[in-house]
Amino acid sequence: MQLEFYKYQGTGNDFVMIDNRSNFFPKEDVKLIERLCDRRFGIGADGLILLENDSETDFRMVYYNSDGNQSSMCGNGGRCLVAFANQLGVIDEKTTFIATDGLHHASVGEDSIISLQMIDVDEIQQKDSYTFLNTGSPHHVQIVEDLEHYNVKDNGAAIRYGALYGEKGSNVNFVKKVDNDTFSLRTYERGVEDETLACGTGATAVAIAMNATGQTDKTSINLNVEGGKLIVSFDKNGNQFTNVFLTGPAKFVFKGTIEI
Ligand SMILES: N[C@@H](CCC[C@H](N)C(=O)O)C(=O)O
Image 1: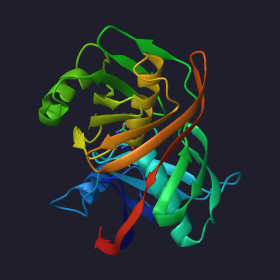
Image 2: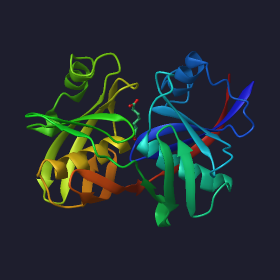
Image 3: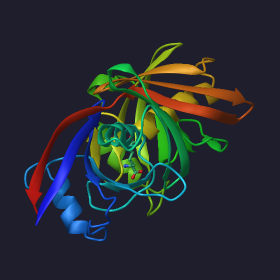
């Protein structure tokens, strides 16, 4: 069977997109999804996303990591799916869709800039050397020396598989403060089991964590990721973060068919 796919990337976090409104895709086939995401034996991507019909919103997002398993929210994937829905003519400039962590509002701007509302955050664990919070996916956030030369893969894996997070694990973000408005980060992603060029829920977690721990008093924060630049903005009331928006480019790369 020939499978039609679209490839998108958001600041270098890349995804295979499939229009599954007719419900044809074998959703439980972990090996197939892993092969489609494989950079040598398949299309190559950090994850795969199905766009499905939903009776109450514009569409449903179903997200899989490149290991073939369905997972929690993907911020960059959500932004890319909004661009895909716009390309398919499913939505115009504004949308509301459903994902695993609930409803998301989003808008399509000029030059493929997509702004996506993320979940509210009110539980933040602050420890001496790190912060942990859930922005739709779980994130460990840690400031490190010499981020440019930091071994993200080995240190990220040690934390992801270590005693702190048990079997479920966590995504792991290493951070450097550039100035009061800007932070750089590199992320080890659970389910990819490697560093990716960007992580949207990770960038969101870093922005909120940096504000919550007093590294900045800003509520609109620039994030330098390996694949480009993102902006995270929010309203803050005590330890409650609402109206959280993740904004950045989401670009169509190519479409094709693959034998499955
Ligand atoms: N790349 C994503 C995060 C995807 C989910 C993550 N790998 C997990 O399983 O927790 C993003 O942009 O947020």
